[in-house]
Image 1 (cartoon, rainbow, N blue to C red):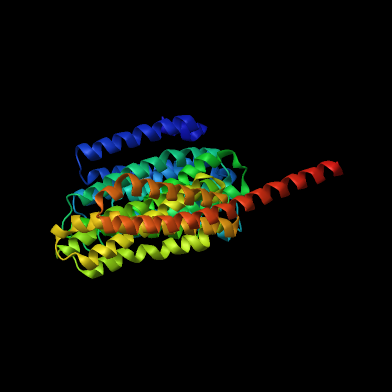
Image 2 (cartoon, rainbow, N blue to C red):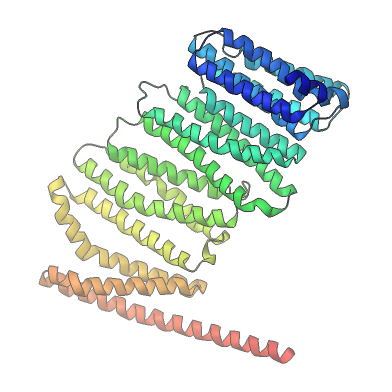
Length: 498
């Protein structure tokens, strides 16, 4: 059947023969792994490679289906032969990837020698580099299926970029989810893995291959977006988000594995700090990475949310461990490093981003600031006054009754001042909302838990805050009134001009 397909150049028959041949070879390989199967892989490789290159040698061209077959032949043959070598403990396992690399390099040299710089050259360049990358990855004991699929997906994207053949895009969108599934199965091996070396272990090396190819995919996809219409922007944004998530999970799991013997709260704190720093790096280089506004805004919301959870859970847990002598002060200092990206984001990144185009963003930022300041002052207070864990509850109640209303009142005044200075009414609204919450907390709960002296002090402070807030409110009201009047005057003048 294959001979007739070859002579008559019947591509459909050739594809049927290819699919059934390799399905049988894979079944044979899994059912009964033996070295004789390798010879059939070699024979199949030669036959189908010659079939795929038939038009290339006759007419000097490669059709889209010829390219797809070339890619599949190389990588399916690598999977089968390397799997057999691994199961039977034969060496070197990279003999076939290297051999296939040489074959494609010869074809590339032929294109270069004849000064042909078209589709065929791009295909053989991609094939040669990809196969060489597979050989290197397998030499370092990376997992077979995950590595091969990851590199194959990148190869398809590269050839798609060079040729604009839509069929390659379809195969890329099919293979990339398989890469993610295979990588998730690789990550699951962390659960039972023991005594893995740092970085140079099969799981992380496999993740490194996936991370590297994913990063290359992002670069290629960015260049594709520049040269094509935005008809697939939704799928490309989803792909970018998934790619950044793959990179994040690969690094996070490796970190968690190597610190798994530390206390749970320390592991959680390190994981949160890494997450915060990772998102901060993405936001910091958002322009170079060409992250869209929607993804940028989403990352900023996730960043601020992680800050809130970090201060409430990780910070409080570390303080408890320090008091119980399960951790030292360095753990708290290391935890506090999150303040650097937070402050930089508030001062430098947020004003230059699209974050404040959503009205609720001001409120979310205000909530983050209030939570961070309140919790960190609480952490320092407990750290300074508590000597054992039994005293924490009492000091916590004291802090909540006496110091927390003062902190909130000061922050509310700061928000109102920022609103007046920068003509940002949303900050003023959040400031007054926080002030109302403070007053309600003070009157409905705190005063009934205080002694007489503390009540007098609380009411005096509250009176001062109310006077100050009243003054600031009048200022804000006048500013808003003048802004509205000015806007109406501008509208009237524009109407008269018309």
